Image (cartoon, rainbow, N blue to C red; front, side, top):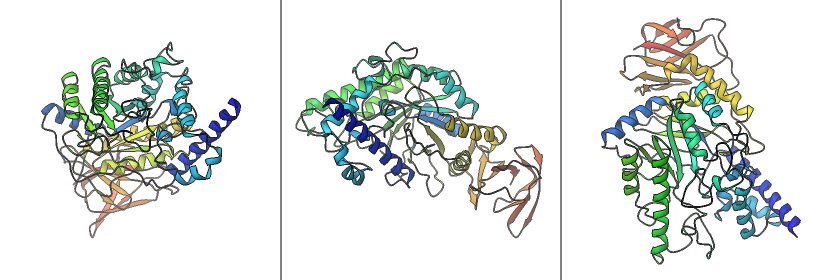
Length: 467
């Protein structure tokens, strides 16, 4: 009987993983987009840190947790909404154990999470070498498994098989390693916690992502959850060194129905972390200091701080059969995002034992090598009114006196002999950033045509000029 259950659970996980990969490889339909409601912070320290963050442009994001053990979608296997997978779950129902058994199997993945190959300094060096400037790390996802040594629950990495590991308090070591490389530090934290009995009470069924009881009928339970959440965030803000960004996921936990007193939580956090950037995702107001479109890029330039969080592969966490996007995709995507006024948080899912896959490293290296030669067109830039012409994206220096044109060479195409765009007509010398040498160009009828020198690498190119 036990063997039969184990096989069913394994089959279920495989089906769920395949469903996740299929869903994420298709055009995403469940995404967080930008809103026209943005409230600028008034705290001068927060404004200063936001300006610094907008200089960084490129962050690396890590989704890593118990879901990485079988390589299934993070947390959502627990949620009865069938978020992406309704049809496939119905088709696979004969392969699935009962939900209660599946849920217990998922919780028990914590007993298998043992990342013995994890070396945080290697992650930080890889990111540093390839032009990343800030990090966002999942301290806790919706499933409630804590990647730090919280005192509020035993559902944490320091209570499992890695408890005596070299870097058992994973969040501490990730933050320390990246801080040592001068990264801005971002703490991803899920406001919902499906493992906590005061969010999902074990007595009730779990029909969706929300608390599975009436919080107005049982206010004492919700109050306990609020206290639990505040205590965990306070730990992260107090015990893990300097933190620049509190990146809060789970936007459905908000006023008025699911109020966790976030204003007070953020105010307390800033007493420990002055200037802290709060990112209460999809909840416009004082605690959404920058917006976070997920798996998407705004159609047009945005005038306020924002960040696209995008996956390098087809899933957020590691999966056993990944479909990686290309290094050129990463370069072109970064150029578009920066021209539209945003930053890119590029997500990588480490393996269960704590490694970054070679295929991911290869693509990060391609992006990093390009940035070494062309980063001036990306870092510390700001938007310019004419920001796009065909495959060419434009950025400007912070003082607005210098313009940059980035030709995002389309996938599968070779670099042409000439590049043309309309608008942003140059005055005087134009420089090819990758070589530092002047290039010849002509202007006619509002159109600029640049002649490329022979022998350039077949990759996107960037130019610098006055306007």
